Image 1: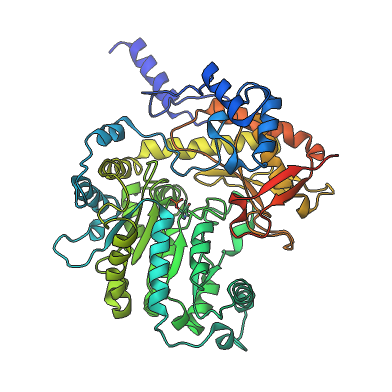
Image 2: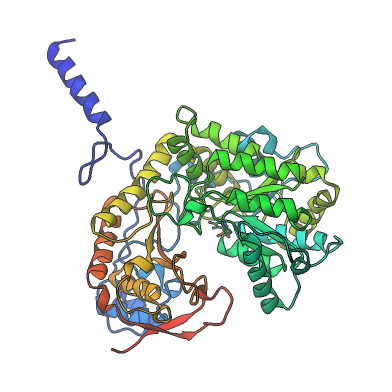
Length: 559
Ligand SMILES: *Cc1c(COP(=O)(O)O)cnc(C)c1O
């Protein structure tokens, strides 16, 4: 090799190792586009939009027409038509994934036989490879342990509905009686008492059971409460710290969990960890935390479950941040994480990298199948699926979907995918931070969360002016769709800060480029710099309904 060639090789090597810096790119994306979708700026779409909603102009091209449409859809992003957004759709990272060419190819190869089709066997194999050999459905076993569903919450509903029926036969006293007079050094029983009263007010029933978690997702929480079981969140102490120093703010509070397990284990049918902790800002859970929860639950013979929607992102954070895991691969870390639990459910619309799908898995050699009263749940779950979703081997999905999921689970743990994903979300968060906008730090895996209490601090804004709702509505007018997960979604009107009062920008997988996200950041900056002018909002419909943020309608108050 000549000196000059050696010279250039060294320079290119240096470029390859260059750390990221604002405004410059040294690494190309790990993928290139194989299909693109223009945002339908055609005359036909514009005419149709104007006619459907009776607007003066097309909302794709006219900001004032967008304001009209935002008004007509009740300032609720769930009701705003997605195809009439000229900007980023950051309402959810669920089912919004751009699939790979390999996944599209799998769709064409789908086997549309009724149940036990080719896709089921491929998916079963891949589940063993991704989560560990022990998770496969044993094809020679009488009972089903792998249940496919059309999405995550259907799996949750099946589990909790059937669990509640099993618990109905358990002879234990009501919770409010048992916890009376217990020592309460952590305050967890005081909090439990409040939740008991809340559930009693809602349903008129005296609850006897609770399911603790590091942070239940909103539909999980609603599904559990609907069965008159208390969903109790045990956030770790660092949960609210807004600081890069706390790498695992998704952890469960182990002191509080120990108190509950020591005093009232017979009232706890399951213990949960949500990985990553979605409601708490997409923050990861450490393997150390997972291991200790396993030890505590094993001692009391209580099954331990994951809500596993973002398992691969969580594993990435463990590798990047937890001591002792830097030289392990993500697939190894995933298998270790799942070796500690007795079961999990997952919305495959997240780290399954697909547009639809979910699953419930029970570990064939885990605690769940070894405890007699739980074991009968397996047959109940199969019966339930036959009544509602078809058969556990397809769970309301087409055969082609199963194949796309198998391919998604193969891809999602790969280094080049996860690096692309996590670093893009971080760049978006950093860009917002350079504009002075209060975002949760460090950024989570799938979304950037704006802290609404800090966003409006120093201004005379009341909770019942719903500033988070107003911010989301204004950004819709700017052309970007985000979501309020704060005072309105969680009914926090009487809860003083610090609290989870967020607006969330969830980033779809493999869908946007930095240019798109940075354009959204500019819109947020514009609103932030003039935040004292953000109008107040009033609720027109739905304030008293459960899960109200999906259904409510609002309007901007006149000045
Ligand atoms: C999305 C999600 C669910 C529910 O899954 P769906 O597929 O939307 O029904 C449950 N838990 C968590 C943590 C989620 O993010």
